[in-house]
Structure formats: structure tokens, C-alpha cells
Length: 351
Image (cartoon, rainbow, N blue to C red; front, side, top):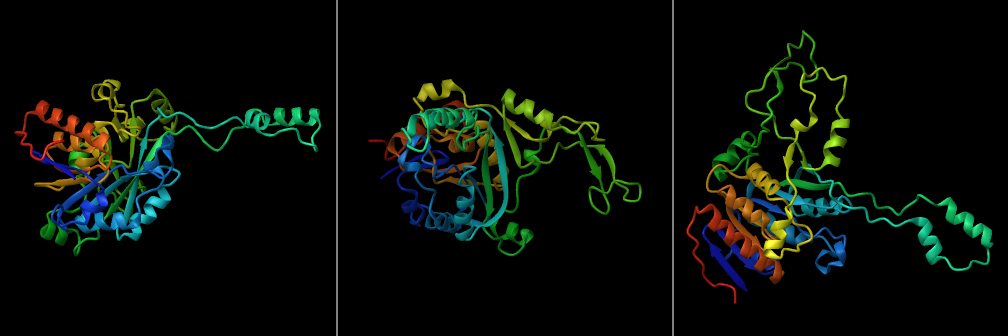
């Protein structure tokens, strides 16, 4: 097994099940948060590693190393997120929310029904040539069940608190989400001391709009820099809204696309690479106040680790595939040199 420690980062080229189950490497109740992008179980691009989602026993080991009150952010596929959520819940986690990352750069993978009929249905004794032609014509414009992928869910779960939120903060130095550091820059308006519920805005409720000086509260929707996404979101703005600020995009977090040069520099052909800005935001959202450690049991090409480095968060990464592990190693060591914040000390290097 290859293990490398680089300043604030420790990465392992091994099956995460083995590492998580060995207290010599990761002690129980020692991890503040887990941010990971595991296999979705959709056989993506026919990759064998994506034939199934992580089993309950793997999430149980994640649960064991996480501190009480610690947060798990787990990417999933729209098609199999229910199975991912069930396994997470069966491992002992409490499901708290589901974030949605809007990413309009996906491409539809559906097939034309008329083409399939013409290609796959041979001469049918029950159909005349004219009937066969009519059948093809009838299904023109129809396609298989595969819409253009435009979002990825991110399941938010929590290891149960040790007491209440206040008691958990004292006992484990972690409690809740890092809201203020993740507020959106666009400040807009907010309700001041609403009574009877935020939607009760009459004079009796005494709910008035005032300037928001601290920024917008983080939402559970994030979006990619895409004309398709921005145009569709703008269509959703209700023209009857009484709020002065009607720009929907100012209410959700923006992140840029993954740049092609990043892939080229490291020969990074990982099919599910995530934007660093997105991972920075997520890591910052779930970090604890001091001396935080974030774990990614399915590290891939190391984007979560880079995000942690940039946010001054300790990182533990595990990746089973040796090729992706080496890519992650190269990206992380380059990032360390770029930010020049810690002295890189290597041991047990790559063979």
C-alpha cells in the first residue's frame, strides 16, 4: 500500500474500506467532515468501478471515523440518488438536505425510437411494408428515456449529535454549518424580525424588508457558468415579485466550469472531475471552526484535496485506482508549491 504525507495532506492508494476500518490510519471520531464523489452505480462510460454505489458497510466505516455532529456531503446521480441516500441512512446517518448542482454542460444519451425500430425489428409477418413504414413515421421525434443531464444531487447527511447542537460544539468542536463564510456576495434585502412566519408580511406581522449587510443566506442550489443554465434560471423569476431585487442568480452559488488546460496539464481524463471552486465552497460550508480535517474516501484525481489546501483545511484522501492516485498526487504537490504555505515533506514516495 502506498501512503504519502505532504504537509497538511495524507493520501493513500488503497481500498477505502480497508483504510477506514484500521484505527492505525484513521481513528474513530477523528474526522470533522466527509466530502466525496463516489461511484454512482450507473455504469458511466462503461467503467467497471461505476457498476454499483458504495455498500452500507462502507458508509458505516465512514460513520465510525466521523465526529458526532460531523457532516457528510455525497455526490450522486439523479437516477440512483435514492439508493445512495438509503445506504447512507442505513449506516446510521441522519439525512438533512439535498443540494442541487446545476451543470448544463452534459449531453443527452438517448436514442431515436424510429431508428431503433428500423434497425432492430426485422421483417414482421404481422406487419405489411406499409404498416412498418407507418410505425417508423409514427415514432419520429420520440427517444429513449434519457433527458439532457443538467444537475447533480449532493446528499447532505449528519452523524447524530452528542446531545444538542450547543453540547456537541463543546464536546467535539463541531456543530452545524459554516453559514457566514459561505454567504453570497450579493446582499439584497432580508426580512427584519418577522412575526407569525416569514411569509406573513402584513402590518400586523411587523415584517419589513431591510438592507442585508452580511450577504445572502446559502441556498441548496449551486450553478455552473453556462448560458443555458443562466437563461433558464432567469425565466424562473416571477415578474409579480414585490422584492426590489428580482435577480434569481444572486440567490445561489456560482462556480466556473472545469478548465480544459487543467485536464491537459496532468493528462487528467477522470470522467467525473469537479470544479475546484465548487469543492472549495462545499468544504468551507462543512468545516469546523479550528484545526479541521476533511476526508474523501473516493478521492479520484484530488479535487477535494486541492480545495482543502486552498481553504487551509487538513485533508485525508483515499483512492483505489493507481493511475488516478498518481494524478491526484501530482496535482496536490503542484498546488502546495503554488500556494507556498507549508513545507512539503514526503515519505514512502511513489515507487
